[in-house]
Length: 375
Image (cartoon, rainbow, N blue to C red; front, side, top):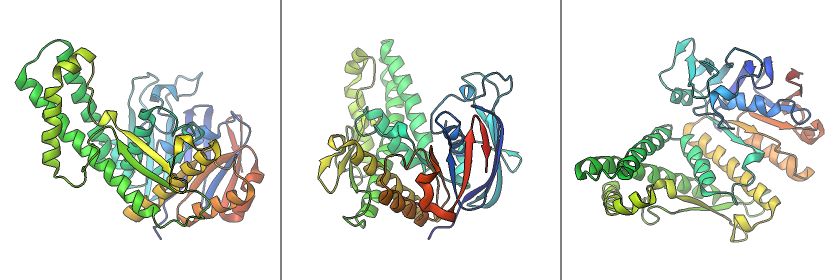
């Protein structure tokens, strides 16, 4: 079983509806119960900011600062992590929406947020993700890229560099500056980054498929069959990357005038879509019932958590918002057993403590009310 990573302490200041808050934790799971709007999800969001990126809500840092205060938010956590005990401090430099956040590890300024992945991996499932299979392709791409990022921290940098290069190309085309040498240089960079993104995505689907193959057909949460479409669909993992890069660079060069007319780059990894099927029914997930879609999503997130543990040797920290709300008693108990079997620490929220009764003493229970937490 993967080694356990867990948060021992977390403190918030001027974060969302919390003026100040502190939790002392042991290695058990954490259950937060309370009325809607009391601040349960806000606490999960704070934990999600112990990973690279803007957290589970993807909100600009300036917007998470508590209303009515002049101070920027701050988060402190003491973590039993992948490299031992570590103190993590993060927060915004200012209230401005465009601000970046600062990050300190054991009191020393970190060069990039990617350093957080040396200490823990944080995964989440929220109600906002319930429409993943029926929503826009961009949501599914972001979901997949988050899966990749949890085992390949460089993936986020590749994606942002690709977006930057694509914006430069779009600007040149929009201005009618068809300098072949200049455009070829940008397109070569886009080809290298875009193919690397595509390969990483396909490899993640391959890893998940191999793991899901071993799941029994009568498992409480159905298995998903995954594939990618929309960019380099065939032979991505079988052909040499150099050949794929040549193909994509040639495609970009051929499409210059079409892209100039469209005002955007029409081919690339930013057009890919994740296709999800209910394996047992051989049905597009988007056509499944709402309950089946939720069960598929839970099964997929749990499979990914297991993969992260297998690949890194350390179980991820899970954030599961309103996870038990629409499950019957038997499926809730099965879910808690599966979460426990992953070997990590999970933070779970709900409005009713009774929904988590099957966890017993495997969890610490806290009540959240109007930005205050009590044990």
